[in-house]
Amino acid sequence: MLTMQATLPLPGPVSMPMPTGSLEAYIQTVNRFPLLSAEEERALAQRYRKHGDLDAARSLVLSHLRLVVALARGYLGYGLPHADLIQEGNIGLMKAVKRFDPDRGVRLVSFAIHWIKAEMHEYILRNWRLVKVATTKAQRKLFFNLRSMKKGLAPLSSDDVARVASELRVKPEEVVEMETRLSGQEIAFEADQDDEEAYAPVNYLAADHDAEPLRLLEAKESEEKRAAGLDEALKSLDPRSRRIVEARWLREKDAATLHDLAAEFKVSAERIRQIEAKALEKMRKALPAPA
Image (cartoon, rainbow, N blue to C red):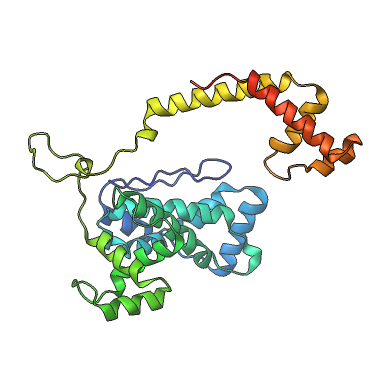
């Protein structure tokens, strides 16, 4: 069921009463909203941008709902409900209206296409598979173009792979991997308990014992104890020795040299080295023994 009683992400609610029921009825309704001329669109956009006029924003949204329907048809091949694609696209349209600047000389339809498609893309990537198939910008481009660039349902030949990779400016192996992932089937991580011979990743994936909650907790407690012990050991030093140790050993970068500290305390570099060695030895004795 498609419901279009929406709230625009603007300074207040913008009610768009629409029929709830069949998708065909919704499409027929949005097609009745009149298109705006350039002058009308500019006037409405300025009313909303300058005065926060939500009626103006509502008119801009309603006049472009048919655009969302048309764009949503292009993504039906991913097996997701047309109504859901339209709903996501409507969110993108409302975001576009919120950000639209009529003084830039661009029509809203051109500006809104990017926002509408972006919301649909995110929806498809979130829901098409449990395992995300496209995370980088290049992978997303490959994901949304590979189906239309394939000639039929047969697997890509080596020539096809090279052609697609060249046109989309990605590596051939990325094309092969994406085709495999798009045509593959989901595999349950754990097999049915009644089937002892079932193939499942849990049976052959090596466990990362260091990532177990108990190990992580133990590591955290150990790190906290070391930090507390180091703080106590530093407190056992006189101010000059502590300054030398901190400058030489406890900086993440740009550690001080012996000559830097020698100039600061107006002694020789050798004297700084001696103070440092004595301080480190004193800290070793003060630190708790490892468990």
